Length: 313
Image (cartoon, rainbow, N blue to C red; front, side, top):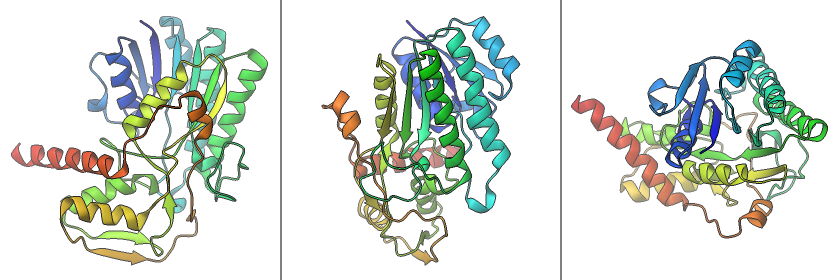
């Protein structure tokens, strides 16, 4: 049994990661300030701290209280859009919070520090598929803060010999996801169907994203945590999926003609984007991601069941 610390463990990806780690027989400590996370997402077998990772005193106390083997740093605030960016929050969470965790992870000799970064560090693709050597030119505050946090993670690896894994998550979707911001497009589409609202597609809908089901993200994350050598990996499906194709898949499996409204393209639209995942495949050649249509169906069914549970109550 290992002791794992999960920051952001009340959130979308962090809560699923906590569940998987506990199922594997680990003790899990969750830190979350509940600014976006939901307490009911936290596995009852986890030790929960209502705290902010930017508070160094709290972080120091937690490391003194527990002999932590692995740190999974997933805490982050996803901005709803460029017009609602919060620079200070991004800095506190992604930069100050990360350096606090790095300081005590290094001092307490954790086995591996897993940092959930984002493909947002790349900005607009200069070439596709985007590999880990692509220039880092983020176009929003979230991506900028993740880029700087990556630099500190790499610094601790180089100077203090801390084993680190920088995982650049693509557009992860699935149960428990918020529909806020661009990354929540599938959750937003699902909830619009259930609430009988039209889809909003910005631009012509031919722009692509690299969408990956949350359970695949978790399995890849846990696999990387077992690595003995520091590395940087795209955690993605490696396949481009257009917004129009997502819309069509929803129509196909729900057997509904869903109203769609095309809106003007936003200034921060990435256009064509998907990841090169050959580096991860080089360490885990046999792993295959869930097909998009299957993942969408599972996500839709989760929200459908949740809606009917609320109605029945």
